Length: 176
Image (tube, rainbow, N blue to C red; front, side, top):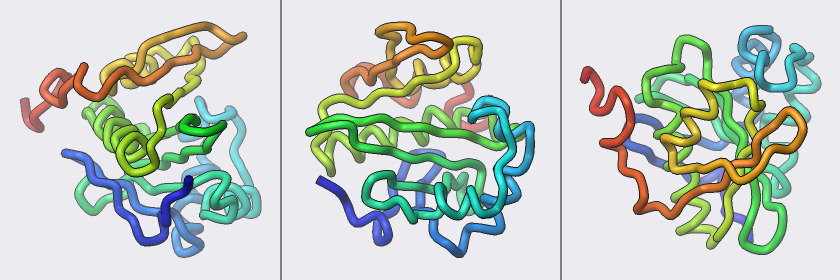
């Protein structure tokens, strides 16, 4: 089951996710060309053509692509892909200056809530690099737990939505 992401906005407390489109290509191409932005997203800067093919919604419905906004400011990219009935994975990357502010866990919680309540997924996974402790901590704040290690990556699975609240997040509420 797929949503119609071109019409949907996924709301968090601090963030919202809007469907990525061709109109976002200049922004996304600049981000994915930056070695710091892609350090934990494959490690290699991407060409404008690669970004257009992968991250502007062209792979819909197999992969759904989103810009993450903090208020109205773009701060990152997220995507989800079904892996079978009621299950799939998500990936996310934030601009370096947006990290450590609770935006990643907030966007992840919002996306997981959407996948559970709108799409009916019962299993949501992520696979951060095992060496990326910041991402692992952020996913844990969003309600994920480690279930296994697969090479240089951890497999993490979402916990039930009621097991973590936004108040448990460091730096929440804003200004704390």
